Image (cartoon, rainbow, N blue to C red):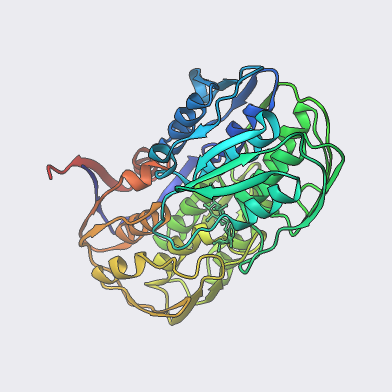
Length: 424
Ligand code: UD1
Protein backbone atom coordinates (compact mmCIF):
# COMPACT_ATOMS: atom_id res chain seq x y z
CA UNK A 1 0.00 0.00 0.00
CA UNK A 2 1.36 3.43 -0.94
CA UNK A 3 2.23 6.06 1.66
CA UNK A 4 3.54 9.59 1.43
CA UNK A 5 6.61 10.58 3.38
CA UNK A 6 6.89 14.32 3.99
CA UNK A 7 9.68 16.20 5.70
CA UNK A 8 8.11 19.43 6.84
CA UNK A 9 9.25 22.91 7.67
CA UNK A 10 9.84 24.31 4.18
CA UNK A 11 8.01 27.33 2.78
CA UNK A 12 6.19 26.54 -0.44
CA UNK A 13 7.08 28.99 -3.19
CA UNK A 14 6.50 29.19 -6.92
CA UNK A 15 3.79 28.40 -9.43
CA UNK A 16 1.54 25.42 -9.83
CA UNK A 17 -1.08 24.65 -12.46
CA UNK A 18 -4.46 23.39 -11.41
CA UNK A 19 -6.05 20.36 -13.15
CA UNK A 20 -9.61 20.05 -14.45
CA UNK A 21 -12.33 19.68 -11.81
CA UNK A 22 -13.10 16.10 -10.84
CA UNK A 23 -16.52 17.03 -9.47
CA UNK A 24 -17.44 18.80 -12.69
CA UNK A 25 -16.09 16.05 -14.94
CA UNK A 26 -17.95 13.20 -13.19
CA UNK A 27 -21.56 14.36 -13.76
CA UNK A 28 -20.63 15.66 -17.21
CA UNK A 29 -19.36 12.19 -18.11
CA UNK A 30 -22.72 10.81 -16.94
CA UNK A 31 -24.48 13.34 -19.20
CA UNK A 32 -23.01 11.51 -22.20
CA UNK A 33 -25.85 8.99 -21.76
CA UNK A 34 -28.23 11.76 -22.87
CA UNK A 35 -26.46 12.65 -26.11
CA UNK A 36 -26.96 11.21 -29.58
CA UNK A 37 -23.50 12.29 -30.72
CA UNK A 38 -20.04 12.03 -29.16
CA UNK A 39 -19.14 14.18 -26.17
CA UNK A 40 -15.57 15.42 -26.41
CA UNK A 41 -14.31 16.56 -23.04
CA UNK A 42 -11.05 18.38 -22.52
CA UNK A 43 -9.19 18.96 -19.27
CA UNK A 44 -10.36 15.69 -17.71
CA UNK A 45 -8.01 14.89 -14.83
CA UNK A 46 -6.41 11.46 -14.70
CA UNK A 47 -7.80 10.29 -11.37
CA UNK A 48 -9.15 7.12 -9.85
CA UNK A 49 -12.73 8.45 -9.59
CA UNK A 50 -12.67 9.38 -13.28
CA UNK A 51 -11.51 5.88 -14.22
CA UNK A 52 -14.22 4.42 -11.99
CA UNK A 53 -16.88 6.53 -13.73
CA UNK A 54 -15.48 5.34 -17.08
CA UNK A 55 -15.91 1.72 -15.90
CA UNK A 56 -19.45 2.42 -14.70
CA UNK A 57 -20.40 4.00 -18.02
CA UNK A 58 -18.84 1.01 -19.77
CA UNK A 59 -21.34 -1.24 -17.92
CA UNK A 60 -24.06 0.98 -19.35
CA UNK A 61 -22.79 0.60 -22.91
CA UNK A 62 -21.06 4.00 -23.13
CA UNK A 63 -17.50 4.00 -24.44
CA UNK A 64 -15.22 6.43 -22.63
CA UNK A 65 -11.92 6.67 -24.44
CA UNK A 66 -9.07 8.69 -23.02
CA UNK A 67 -6.92 10.43 -25.63
CA UNK A 68 -3.71 12.30 -25.08
CA UNK A 69 -3.56 15.52 -23.07
CA UNK A 70 -6.63 15.14 -20.87
CA UNK A 71 -9.15 14.67 -23.67
CA UNK A 72 -11.86 12.07 -23.32
CA UNK A 73 -14.37 11.01 -25.96
CA UNK A 74 -17.62 9.50 -24.72
CA UNK A 75 -20.10 7.79 -27.02
CA UNK A 76 -23.43 6.42 -25.94
CA UNK A 77 -25.22 3.93 -28.19
CA UNK A 78 -28.33 5.42 -29.83
CA UNK A 79 -30.39 2.53 -28.50
CA UNK A 80 -29.58 0.56 -25.40
CA UNK A 81 -31.54 -0.85 -22.51
CA UNK A 82 -28.53 -1.40 -20.30
CA UNK A 83 -29.46 0.21 -17.00
CA UNK A 84 -27.67 -1.55 -14.15
CA UNK A 85 -25.12 0.36 -12.08
CA UNK A 86 -23.71 -2.39 -9.85
CA UNK A 87 -22.89 -2.11 -6.16
CA UNK A 88 -19.28 -3.24 -6.75
CA UNK A 89 -18.62 0.05 -8.54
CA UNK A 90 -21.10 2.29 -6.71
CA UNK A 91 -19.64 1.46 -3.30
CA UNK A 92 -16.34 3.11 -4.20
CA UNK A 93 -17.62 6.42 -5.57
CA UNK A 94 -20.76 8.30 -4.68
CA UNK A 95 -20.82 10.36 -7.87
CA UNK A 96 -21.92 7.17 -9.64
CA UNK A 97 -25.45 8.18 -8.57
CA UNK A 98 -25.29 10.79 -11.37
CA UNK A 99 -26.18 8.12 -13.93
CA UNK A 100 -29.68 7.80 -12.42
CA UNK A 101 -31.20 10.95 -13.96
CA UNK A 102 -29.76 10.35 -17.47
CA UNK A 103 -30.84 6.69 -17.44
CA UNK A 104 -34.40 7.63 -16.53
CA UNK A 105 -34.55 10.39 -19.15
CA UNK A 106 -32.98 8.47 -22.02
CA UNK A 107 -33.65 4.81 -21.36
CA UNK A 108 -36.77 4.96 -19.19
CA UNK A 109 -35.34 2.53 -16.68
CA UNK A 110 -32.58 2.25 -14.10
CA UNK A 111 -31.24 -0.20 -11.56
CA UNK A 112 -28.73 1.86 -9.65
CA UNK A 113 -27.14 0.61 -6.46
CA UNK A 114 -27.38 2.97 -3.52
CA UNK A 115 -23.88 4.35 -3.10
CA UNK A 116 -21.71 2.96 -0.32
CA UNK A 117 -21.32 4.45 3.16
CA UNK A 118 -18.90 7.30 3.46
CA UNK A 119 -16.35 8.41 6.00
CA UNK A 120 -17.63 11.98 5.99
CA UNK A 121 -21.08 11.03 7.30
CA UNK A 122 -24.59 10.23 6.08
CA UNK A 123 -25.18 10.85 2.44
CA UNK A 124 -28.85 10.28 1.68
CA UNK A 125 -30.32 10.46 -1.81
CA UNK A 126 -33.89 11.49 -0.88
CA UNK A 127 -33.62 14.80 -2.79
CA UNK A 128 -32.51 12.98 -5.97
CA UNK A 129 -35.55 10.70 -5.66
CA UNK A 130 -37.90 13.55 -4.80
CA UNK A 131 -36.93 15.52 -7.90
CA UNK A 132 -37.07 12.57 -10.27
CA UNK A 133 -40.42 11.44 -8.86
CA UNK A 134 -41.77 14.96 -9.42
CA UNK A 135 -40.86 14.45 -13.09
CA UNK A 136 -42.96 11.30 -13.17
CA UNK A 137 -40.35 8.59 -12.55
CA UNK A 138 -41.46 5.53 -10.57
CA UNK A 139 -38.65 4.76 -8.14
CA UNK A 140 -38.49 2.04 -5.49
CA UNK A 141 -35.66 0.85 -3.28
CA UNK A 142 -35.21 -2.92 -3.46
CA UNK A 143 -32.30 -5.00 -2.19
CA UNK A 144 -30.03 -1.96 -1.99
CA UNK A 145 -30.86 -0.78 -5.51
CA UNK A 146 -32.93 2.13 -6.78
CA UNK A 147 -35.25 0.53 -9.32
CA UNK A 148 -36.69 3.10 -11.68
CA UNK A 149 -39.03 3.09 -14.63
CA UNK A 150 -40.92 5.73 -16.56
CA UNK A 151 -42.36 6.69 -19.89
CA UNK A 152 -41.33 10.14 -21.08
CA UNK A 153 -40.70 12.38 -18.07
CA UNK A 154 -42.92 15.45 -17.63
CA UNK A 155 -41.73 18.90 -16.58
CA UNK A 156 -42.71 19.92 -13.03
CA UNK A 157 -42.09 22.54 -10.38
CA UNK A 158 -40.11 21.33 -7.40
CA UNK A 159 -38.23 22.47 -4.29
CA UNK A 160 -34.93 20.63 -3.79
CA UNK A 161 -33.77 22.04 -0.45
CA UNK A 162 -32.94 19.60 2.36
CA UNK A 163 -31.94 20.02 6.02
CA UNK A 164 -28.43 21.07 4.92
CA UNK A 165 -29.44 23.19 1.96
CA UNK A 166 -29.23 22.24 -1.68
CA UNK A 167 -27.69 19.06 -3.06
CA UNK A 168 -24.94 19.27 -5.67
CA UNK A 169 -25.30 15.84 -7.27
CA UNK A 170 -29.06 15.90 -6.55
CA UNK A 171 -29.42 19.06 -8.65
CA UNK A 172 -27.19 17.56 -11.34
CA UNK A 173 -29.30 14.39 -11.51
CA UNK A 174 -32.63 16.16 -11.72
CA UNK A 175 -31.32 18.73 -14.21
CA UNK A 176 -30.04 15.96 -16.49
CA UNK A 177 -33.47 14.33 -16.38
CA UNK A 178 -35.41 17.58 -16.88
CA UNK A 179 -33.60 18.57 -20.08
CA UNK A 180 -35.30 15.73 -21.98
CA UNK A 181 -38.67 15.97 -20.15
CA UNK A 182 -41.84 17.09 -21.84
CA UNK A 183 -42.52 20.73 -20.88
CA UNK A 184 -41.12 23.15 -18.33
CA UNK A 185 -39.31 22.22 -15.11
CA UNK A 186 -38.55 24.64 -12.30
CA UNK A 187 -35.93 23.50 -9.78
CA UNK A 188 -36.04 25.70 -6.71
CA UNK A 189 -33.21 25.64 -4.16
CA UNK A 190 -30.94 24.27 -6.86
CA UNK A 191 -27.24 24.01 -5.99
CA UNK A 192 -25.26 26.96 -7.41
CA UNK A 193 -21.81 25.32 -7.22
CA UNK A 194 -19.52 26.02 -10.20
CA UNK A 195 -19.55 22.29 -11.01
CA UNK A 196 -23.35 22.38 -11.47
CA UNK A 197 -22.95 25.49 -13.64
CA UNK A 198 -20.39 23.69 -15.77
CA UNK A 199 -22.73 20.74 -16.25
CA UNK A 200 -25.54 23.11 -17.25
CA UNK A 201 -23.27 24.77 -19.85
CA UNK A 202 -22.44 21.38 -21.37
CA UNK A 203 -26.14 20.48 -21.52
CA UNK A 204 -26.78 23.81 -23.26
CA UNK A 205 -24.09 23.01 -25.82
CA UNK A 206 -25.85 19.67 -26.40
CA UNK A 207 -29.05 21.58 -27.16
CA UNK A 208 -30.76 21.87 -23.77
CA UNK A 209 -32.64 25.04 -22.83
CA UNK A 210 -31.81 26.15 -19.31
CA UNK A 211 -32.32 29.54 -17.65
CA UNK A 212 -30.97 30.71 -14.30
CA UNK A 213 -27.62 28.90 -14.45
CA UNK A 214 -25.65 29.71 -11.30
CA UNK A 215 -28.77 30.79 -9.40
CA UNK A 216 -30.89 28.75 -6.97
CA UNK A 217 -33.79 28.67 -9.45
CA UNK A 218 -33.23 26.73 -12.65
CA UNK A 219 -35.90 26.81 -15.35
CA UNK A 220 -35.63 24.11 -17.99
CA UNK A 221 -37.60 23.85 -21.22
CA UNK A 222 -37.47 20.18 -22.19
CA UNK A 223 -36.29 19.25 -25.69
CA UNK A 224 -36.77 16.02 -27.68
CA UNK A 225 -33.19 15.34 -28.50
CA UNK A 226 -29.64 16.26 -27.45
CA UNK A 227 -26.55 16.02 -29.64
CA UNK A 228 -22.86 15.72 -28.91
CA UNK A 229 -20.56 18.66 -28.19
CA UNK A 230 -17.05 19.66 -27.18
CA UNK A 231 -16.29 21.18 -23.80
CA UNK A 232 -13.35 22.02 -21.57
CA UNK A 233 -13.95 21.17 -17.91
CA UNK A 234 -13.51 24.06 -15.45
CA UNK A 235 -10.37 24.13 -13.27
CA UNK A 236 -10.67 22.30 -9.95
CA UNK A 237 -11.42 24.90 -7.30
CA UNK A 238 -10.82 22.43 -4.46
CA UNK A 239 -7.40 21.41 -5.75
CA UNK A 240 -6.58 25.09 -6.30
CA UNK A 241 -7.84 25.94 -2.81
CA UNK A 242 -5.71 23.17 -1.32
CA UNK A 243 -2.55 24.70 -2.83
CA UNK A 244 -3.56 28.18 -1.67
CA UNK A 245 -4.11 26.97 1.89
CA UNK A 246 -0.81 25.04 1.76
CA UNK A 247 0.95 28.21 0.60
CA UNK A 248 -0.48 30.29 3.45
CA UNK A 249 0.04 27.53 6.03
CA UNK A 250 3.76 27.19 5.23
CA UNK A 251 4.17 30.99 5.19
CA UNK A 252 5.03 30.68 1.54
CA UNK A 253 4.30 32.47 -1.71
CA UNK A 254 2.30 30.36 -4.14
CA UNK A 255 0.63 31.24 -7.43
CA UNK A 256 -2.04 28.83 -8.60
CA UNK A 257 -2.45 29.08 -12.38
CA UNK A 258 -5.95 28.50 -13.65
CA UNK A 259 -7.57 29.15 -10.24
CA UNK A 260 -10.75 31.13 -10.78
CA UNK A 261 -11.23 34.07 -8.42
CA UNK A 262 -15.03 33.99 -8.42
CA UNK A 263 -15.11 30.27 -7.66
CA UNK A 264 -12.77 30.71 -4.71
CA UNK A 265 -13.76 34.01 -3.20
CA UNK A 266 -15.07 32.40 0.03
CA UNK A 267 -11.61 30.96 0.61
CA UNK A 268 -9.75 34.08 -0.56
CA UNK A 269 -11.70 36.13 1.95
CA UNK A 270 -10.82 33.68 4.75
CA UNK A 271 -7.13 33.67 3.81
CA UNK A 272 -7.09 37.45 3.98
CA UNK A 273 -8.77 37.39 7.38
CA UNK A 274 -6.07 35.08 8.77
CA UNK A 275 -3.46 37.58 7.61
CA UNK A 276 -2.32 36.19 4.25
CA UNK A 277 -2.21 38.35 1.16
CA UNK A 278 -4.28 37.03 -1.71
CA UNK A 279 -4.46 38.61 -5.13
CA UNK A 280 -5.92 37.92 -8.52
CA UNK A 281 -3.34 37.95 -11.29
CA UNK A 282 -4.00 37.15 -14.92
CA UNK A 283 -5.83 33.82 -14.77
CA UNK A 284 -4.23 32.88 -11.48
CA UNK A 285 -4.49 33.50 -7.76
CA UNK A 286 -1.44 34.28 -5.67
CA UNK A 287 -1.25 33.84 -1.92
CA UNK A 288 1.60 35.03 0.25
CA UNK A 289 1.96 34.81 4.03
CA UNK A 290 4.83 36.57 5.73
CA UNK A 291 4.09 35.77 9.36
CA UNK A 292 2.18 33.45 11.64
CA UNK A 293 -1.51 33.25 10.66
CA UNK A 294 -4.22 34.63 12.94
CA UNK A 295 -7.07 32.55 14.32
CA UNK A 296 -10.51 32.88 12.78
CA UNK A 297 -14.01 31.36 12.85
CA UNK A 298 -14.88 29.46 9.68
CA UNK A 299 -18.30 28.06 8.78
CA UNK A 300 -18.86 25.87 5.76
CA UNK A 301 -21.84 26.73 3.57
CA UNK A 302 -23.16 25.97 0.11
CA UNK A 303 -21.53 28.01 -2.69
CA UNK A 304 -20.53 30.85 -2.61
CA UNK A 305 -19.86 30.14 1.08
CA UNK A 306 -16.70 28.51 2.39
CA UNK A 307 -16.66 25.00 0.81
CA UNK A 308 -16.92 21.92 3.00
CA UNK A 309 -14.33 20.31 0.72
CA UNK A 310 -11.73 22.81 2.02
CA UNK A 311 -12.72 22.62 5.69
CA UNK A 312 -10.16 19.99 6.68
CA UNK A 313 -7.32 21.74 4.85
CA UNK A 314 -8.18 25.10 6.48
CA UNK A 315 -8.36 23.46 9.89
CA UNK A 316 -4.86 22.06 9.36
CA UNK A 317 -3.62 25.59 8.63
CA UNK A 318 -5.34 26.93 11.76
CA UNK A 319 -3.62 24.40 14.05
CA UNK A 320 -0.59 26.71 14.20
CA UNK A 321 -2.44 30.05 14.00
CA UNK A 322 -2.17 32.56 16.79
CA UNK A 323 -5.27 32.16 19.00
CA UNK A 324 -8.40 30.06 19.09
CA UNK A 325 -10.39 29.23 15.95
CA UNK A 326 -13.83 27.67 15.66
CA UNK A 327 -14.53 25.61 12.55
CA UNK A 328 -18.23 24.85 12.06
CA UNK A 329 -19.48 22.32 9.54
CA UNK A 330 -22.93 23.11 8.14
CA UNK A 331 -22.93 20.67 5.22
CA UNK A 332 -21.65 17.39 6.68
CA UNK A 333 -21.90 17.76 10.48
CA UNK A 334 -19.74 14.66 11.12
CA UNK A 335 -16.94 15.57 8.76
CA UNK A 336 -14.15 15.64 11.35
CA UNK A 337 -12.21 12.44 10.75
CA UNK A 338 -9.02 14.48 10.43
CA UNK A 339 -9.24 15.85 13.99
CA UNK A 340 -7.78 12.78 15.70
CA UNK A 341 -4.97 12.39 13.16
CA UNK A 342 -4.03 16.08 13.40
CA UNK A 343 -3.93 15.52 17.17
CA UNK A 344 -1.22 12.90 16.63
CA UNK A 345 0.89 15.68 15.16
CA UNK A 346 0.45 17.90 18.20
CA UNK A 347 -2.63 19.88 17.13
CA UNK A 348 -4.93 20.93 19.96
CA UNK A 349 -8.47 20.47 18.66
CA UNK A 350 -11.64 19.76 20.61
CA UNK A 351 -14.67 18.60 18.70
CA UNK A 352 -18.02 19.94 19.88
CA UNK A 353 -21.11 18.69 18.03
CA UNK A 354 -20.75 19.98 14.46
CA UNK A 355 -17.86 22.30 15.29
CA UNK A 356 -14.20 21.99 16.25
CA UNK A 357 -12.37 24.38 18.52
CA UNK A 358 -8.75 24.75 17.46
CA UNK A 359 -6.19 26.13 19.93
CA UNK A 360 -3.31 27.33 17.83
CA UNK A 361 0.03 25.86 18.82
CA UNK A 362 3.50 27.12 17.82
CA UNK A 363 4.45 24.10 15.75
CA UNK A 364 3.30 20.61 14.80
CA UNK A 365 5.63 17.65 14.87
CA UNK A 366 5.79 14.90 12.27
CA UNK A 367 4.14 11.56 13.09
CA UNK A 368 2.77 8.46 11.38
CA UNK A 369 -0.85 9.23 10.42
CA UNK A 370 -3.58 7.61 8.41
CA UNK A 371 -5.76 9.16 5.71
CA UNK A 372 -9.50 8.55 6.18
CA UNK A 373 -11.08 10.29 3.21
CA UNK A 374 -10.09 12.44 0.29
CA UNK A 375 -10.04 15.93 1.79
CA UNK A 376 -8.91 14.76 5.24
CA UNK A 377 -5.88 13.31 3.47
CA UNK A 378 -5.12 16.69 1.91
CA UNK A 379 -5.34 18.23 5.39
CA UNK A 380 -2.75 15.74 6.66
CA UNK A 381 -0.42 16.63 3.78
CA UNK A 382 -0.71 20.34 4.68
CA UNK A 383 -0.09 19.57 8.36
CA UNK A 384 2.92 17.47 7.37
CA UNK A 385 4.33 20.32 5.27
CA UNK A 386 4.06 22.62 8.28
CA UNK A 387 5.42 20.16 10.83
CA UNK A 388 8.91 19.73 12.22
CA UNK A 389 10.40 16.39 11.08
CA UNK A 390 9.01 13.47 9.17
CA UNK A 391 5.38 12.47 8.68
CA UNK A 392 4.29 9.25 7.03
CA UNK A 393 0.75 9.34 5.67
CA UNK A 394 -0.65 5.92 4.90
CA UNK A 395 -3.73 4.97 2.86
CA UNK A 396 -3.00 7.62 0.24
CA UNK A 397 -5.33 5.87 -2.20
CA UNK A 398 -7.90 8.34 -0.86
CA UNK A 399 -5.76 11.21 -2.19
CA UNK A 400 -5.38 9.50 -5.54
CA UNK A 401 -9.16 9.70 -5.98
CA UNK A 402 -9.02 13.47 -6.22
CA UNK A 403 -5.55 15.00 -6.69
CA UNK A 404 -3.63 14.60 -9.94
CA UNK A 405 0.17 14.39 -9.55
CA UNK A 406 0.01 15.88 -6.05
CA UNK A 407 3.55 14.98 -4.98
CA UNK A 408 5.03 16.20 -8.25
CA UNK A 409 3.22 19.53 -7.99
CA UNK A 410 4.20 19.99 -4.35
CA UNK A 411 7.84 19.11 -5.08
CA UNK A 412 7.86 21.81 -7.73
CA UNK A 413 6.84 24.25 -4.98
CA UNK A 414 9.80 23.12 -2.88
CA UNK A 415 8.21 20.47 -0.67
CA UNK A 416 10.14 17.41 0.42
CA UNK A 417 7.67 14.67 -0.31
CA UNK A 418 7.93 11.18 -1.79
CA UNK A 419 5.73 8.17 -2.31
CA UNK A 420 6.80 4.86 -0.87
CA UNK A 421 5.28 1.42 -0.92
CA UNK A 422 4.63 0.13 2.59
CA UNK A 423 4.54 -3.65 2.62
CA UNK A 424 1.52 -4.54 4.76
C1 UD1 B 1 -20.89 16.94 -3.65
C2 UD1 B 1 -19.41 16.78 -3.87
C3 UD1 B 1 -18.68 16.70 -2.54
C4 UD1 B 1 -19.04 17.92 -1.68
C5 UD1 B 1 -20.54 18.08 -1.57
C6 UD1 B 1 -20.96 19.35 -0.86
C7 UD1 B 1 -19.38 15.57 -5.95
C8 UD1 B 1 -19.07 14.30 -6.66
N1 UD1 B 1 -19.20 15.57 -4.63
O1 UD1 B 1 -21.34 15.78 -2.97
O2 UD1 B 1 -17.29 16.66 -2.78
O3 UD1 B 1 -18.50 17.74 -0.38
O4 UD1 B 1 -21.14 18.12 -2.88
O5 UD1 B 1 -20.45 20.47 -1.50
O6 UD1 B 1 -19.71 16.55 -6.57
N2 UD1 B 1 -28.39 15.64 1.31
C9 UD1 B 1 -29.66 15.27 1.69
N3 UD1 B 1 -30.42 14.57 0.79
C10 UD1 B 1 -29.97 14.26 -0.46
C11 UD1 B 1 -28.68 14.68 -0.84
C12 UD1 B 1 -27.91 15.37 0.06
O7 UD1 B 1 -30.10 15.53 2.79
O8 UD1 B 1 -30.71 13.64 -1.23
C13 UD1 B 1 -27.54 16.39 2.26
C14 UD1 B 1 -26.19 15.74 2.49
O9 UD1 B 1 -26.26 14.75 3.49
C15 UD1 B 1 -25.36 16.92 2.91
C16 UD1 B 1 -25.92 18.05 2.05
O10 UD1 B 1 -27.23 17.63 1.68
O11 UD1 B 1 -25.59 17.20 4.27
C17 UD1 B 1 -25.12 18.37 0.82
O12 UD1 B 1 -24.86 17.17 0.10
P1 UD1 B 1 -24.69 17.14 -1.48
O13 UD1 B 1 -24.56 18.52 -2.01
O14 UD1 B 1 -25.74 16.27 -2.06
O15 UD1 B 1 -23.31 16.39 -1.65
P2 UD1 B 1 -22.90 15.48 -2.87
O16 UD1 B 1 -23.59 15.97 -4.09
O17 UD1 B 1 -23.02 14.04 -2.51
